[in-house]
Image (cartoon, rainbow, N blue to C red):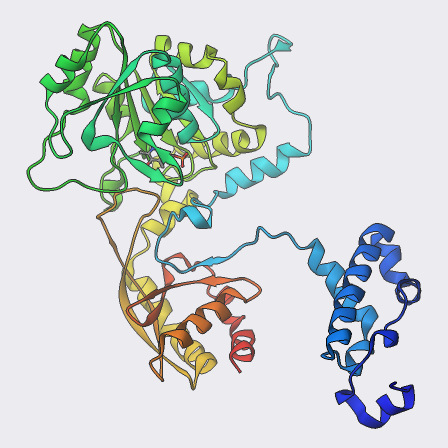
Length: 476
Ligand SMILES: *Cc1c(COP(=O)(O)O)cnc(C)c1O
């Protein structure tokens, strides 16, 4: 078979056979610094996997001798790769600001600092520093949430889906819950209102029709078996045309006359009126409470701009029942998001500064002109990186708020549109893949044979431009 001197003669093209591979022990002996740094377990596991892979290829006759010359380096790269987290920072150039698949709201500095400061240290999560006795984690933010929303009581859980599930289970478990047919929403994944009802142990009673529901529909559906009336904000779609819905202010007296609580799932729920920054208005929890709702639930990581959390605000009686319900313990918020949530909520004490303090709000209010200037600035370098197979131009775009907020509203934006010169869709897919393969993956969107990069959420342009040489290499 292949003698060592032949591989020299044939240079890098010569094929290796299995017996050319070093034994595991030999390879490990050549990797002493790697072993010293990372220990035997990881290095040996990766070495074995590396040699197995090479052996398969040697048997198949596809392994070049040259590949065996730098095995310690190959192994070191493999070990490094194994230590890289798979959850990574990416550049969201999709045009959807609060993107559920890309981690939703960005945390404010204040929230990040609070997490960093607290998580490696013991803290008073459930310890009352005044009394020197056991405390309640909800109390850390209850007063703040009540101040911001006008609620009597508040509690928090893992996310808004959990808040809805818990609210229905605690207030309507074993009984009937009335919902308008126009509000039987699917939020995404497997979160559909009818399924949530049954998971919560409540019997769904649908009233009205898809497009129209009237006060009498609710009144006629109330029986001694009814436990709750639920309003759901149709956050990811709109019913237009011949429509009628019963608002909370009309529904609250109907519920209360029958001795029933009214719960409203707001979805996003902004804590401040977004129209003061020229953004479309989104229903406020404080307005829902003022309209007579007993419980309002909303997300922490949508328009609020905080960590994943489900916020529950309302009357002492209703929130008290929710807090005492056993499922609450299973859905409670952990100290990590709680720290971030408290810091985020405190930013709302200074609403005048919110645009500076909350990254998500900053991105949502970014002027189109500023984004267009950025597109203009990046155009020459991006063009050079993708030439000659692709051509690039600046374009006006429409960003979306995302996460089911204000589904039909668009924010005027700008960015780059990349077209394949040969006009084939597959080429564009390859470019999108190359962008996703960068050290800081770049996520755009393909629309009508163009790859669009909406620059609204690119707050550090260097994160894109510094990667363009790697993109050019990947496309070469
Ligand atoms: C987003 C949303 C939910 C789910 O909230 P999460 O925080 O994602 O769990 C529930 N209801 C409505 C109306 C929503 O928009």
